[in-house]
Length: 183
Image (cartoon, rainbow, N blue to C red; front, side, top):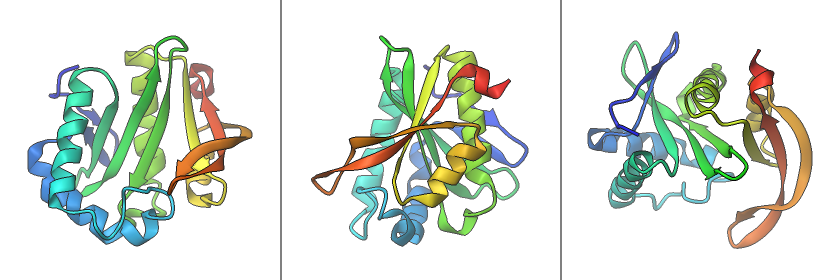
């Protein structure tokens, strides 16, 4: 898919990463890492400019080759980098994907994740024609669980060894969305 893609919501602009997003992305990660690190292994105090550069390049390549679709999220008013949403682990055989998201700390608890997720969910079902999305959360990540439910995802189960974090398998909660959940 082409990289000149954009989704808009009342408060947000979502688009594939650009190389120019490097410093805003790195700053957002560094400002938020203490809140994200319990859930996102890559998000730690050692995340540096080289890693951010590699992340952006990998994201752009994955988008171009239809392996995954990560969208950087920006505030429509001040163009501040807010976080990302992504469709990954796309499985054509099952016509499904995983939905992931993280939001910069100073934008927490404002409905940003729900608004951004709703946009990418519609993209997944209407433009990509997917028929199932899964949101996998740590069992104690209450904010992410609340966001999943706010997006009309249905809690399905606690899946054994569903998350591999810090070289250890752990249980995860599985939430799902199908197109009928939106209408």
